[in-house]
Image (tube, rainbow, N blue to C red; front, side):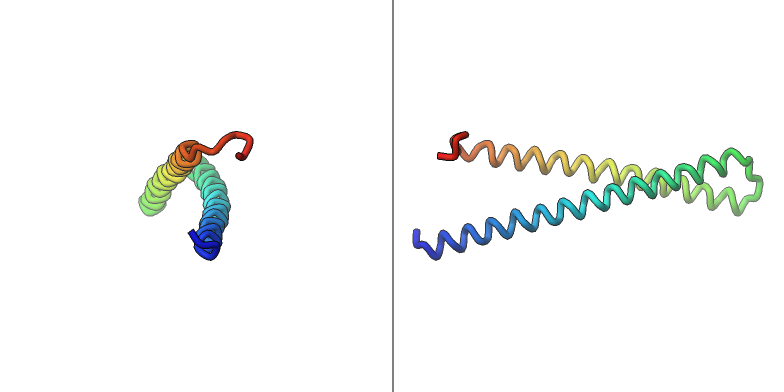
Amino acid sequence: MSISTIGDLVGRSMSFIAGKYCNQATAEENQQRLQQLLMRISTIVEEAEGRHVRNQGMLQQLKILRDEMFRGCYLLDNFRYRAIQDKAKDDEWWGGRGFAEDGS
């Protein structure tokens, strides 16, 4: 293998790893933001349910808000599950490379 081929391979690998790290940071930020929003929505839903609203329009809006909250919780769980799955795949890939622990 030529030096330029190895250099290109190393460069592409580093770009891939850097891109994956940046995407992971963004994904973690999105998860935190979604979790914060879901907590706020949950508080609003609980407060509204405690007021025994009788207006049909408000009850319909409350139902929509509650349904979307559950959908958001499902989405957050999926994000977390996929992150765990991706990490397990990465660990499996790196673990199977056969590199010695001392780096040789």
